[in-house]
Length: 117
Image (cartoon, rainbow, N blue to C red; front, side, top):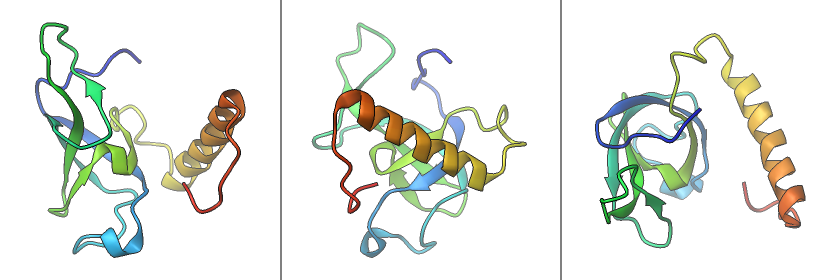
């Protein structure tokens, strides 16, 4: 998968909502919800560079779910290609995500803190 183009909205699927329960919106935990990434918007302390190198905007993806909730890309793990992965069950995606996080922690030398996702 290449770099994501945030210049136009695109469909996404939330794999894992990483917010604390008190932060959930009206629909609760958003695991498995589909939505639209609306683009990059300013979000404190978490930055992604836009695809266009001339664009000086540094921000974070904002996702509007089909249930009407908004979630920042930094608050969840999400799939930018849900059509390609539509046949993969959510529980399998979540297990793969957990293994991926363990691998990243090991490669980065980060000790696992069970209070974090």
